Amino acid sequence: MNLLPESPKVDGKRTSPVQGDLRLLVTKAKGKSVAMLYRAVVSGTAEKDRVLFESPIGKVWFDRVDNVSGQLQLAQDGSNAEFSMPLSALSLSPKAGESVLADFGSPASASQLGSLDLSRLRFQIARA
Image (tube, rainbow, N blue to C red; front, side, top):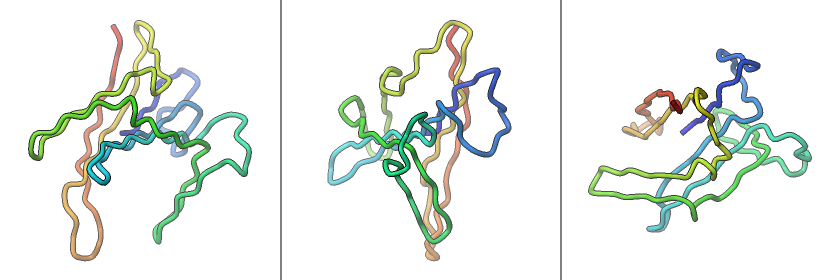
């Protein structure tokens, strides 16, 4: 899930991440629930501390990657699953009237060529 906190100072049509943008990966690995929080831009991060993810089709840098599995609650029934994560684990504390843009992607199918199709849902989280 990508979370993009809205700010009047940030262009909503930007093509590169800014401070505050988050990516949360939730999965099962070796029978255990895992949640990793990726932050592409964190002020003051030393070059040596950045993390590179690279594949045959591209590469992306993250200033910080944290394991937040201890704060994840995951429930599964067959192919249906739901999870919850405290907003504080994501460093989010929206005030009344603020909102967060988010999108949710889930692998839907993989072809024999090795490509992956994603189901995507875009939504807005708003605090009244």
